[in-house]
Length: 153
Image (cartoon, rainbow, N blue to C red; front, side, top):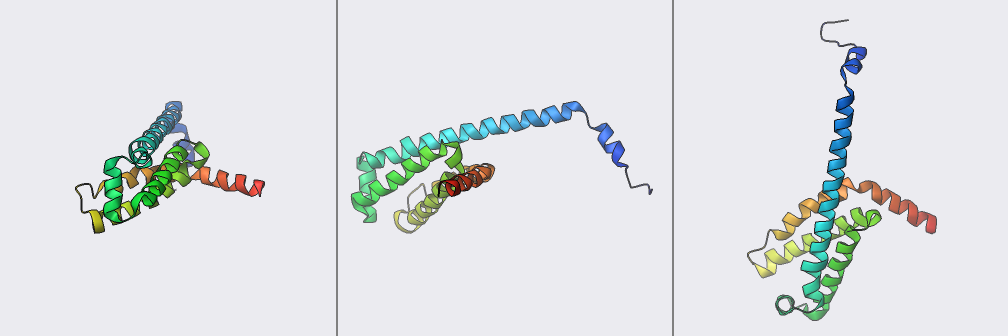
């Protein structure tokens, strides 16, 4: 053996049981944090974003009238946000919901840049970051969902 080669037995003998338990704890903490993020974003989309559109709050109605989309566009976007926000709370749907809401946020960013020119242009892009994290971290749920749908078909 050369001086730079380390025997495999040396590497395995140096790993301690505490390192395995710290990985489990870190994994548990990450799962809890991710779940909390999903709950916060789900409630944000359902209550703070969709609700004003679905109850035709004057500020939402004014914004959609300015876009030329009227109440139909407002109710459609509100319904999509409500569905996405609620789906973020359902484990099997969380990854798909995060991807769908990210696509909706891309559209919101384009509309903000091209039409509205308001002070909150970057907000949709900021919301895409945690949605992308959820979509990536929960990607195994998408596989489960596809299997479930195929069994039902």
